[in-house]
Amino acid sequence: MSDLPPCPNCHSSLSYEDGSLLVCPECAHEWSPVAAAVEAQSSGIRDANGKLLQDGDTVTVIKDLKIKGSSQVVKVGTKVKNIRLVGGDHDIDCRIDGIGAMKLKSEFVKKV
Image (tube, rainbow, N blue to C red):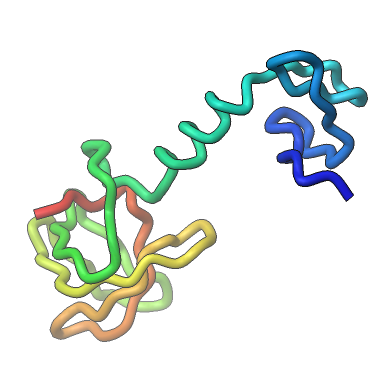
């Protein structure tokens, strides 16, 4: 089995080397393995301002957020301490004082 990365365009595992480039036979996409490594390193969960978030960070909510199934609202400026990053659509697990455990989207917070 090949240890080459899958195609970033169509995610095919059939990629092969052609000189200094990697090529996908299914979609004909060509990419540099060096650029792919840099992109994988730079990807991560980022806040609304583009700062990279990490587990344990403190963030501030930048928009009033309605809580589904409740009449409560998380107000602008609410500080959330000790976040935990998870995969998925709502990529931050946290506990908000007065509300409890919640999942937030990183696009609605900024790092403090």
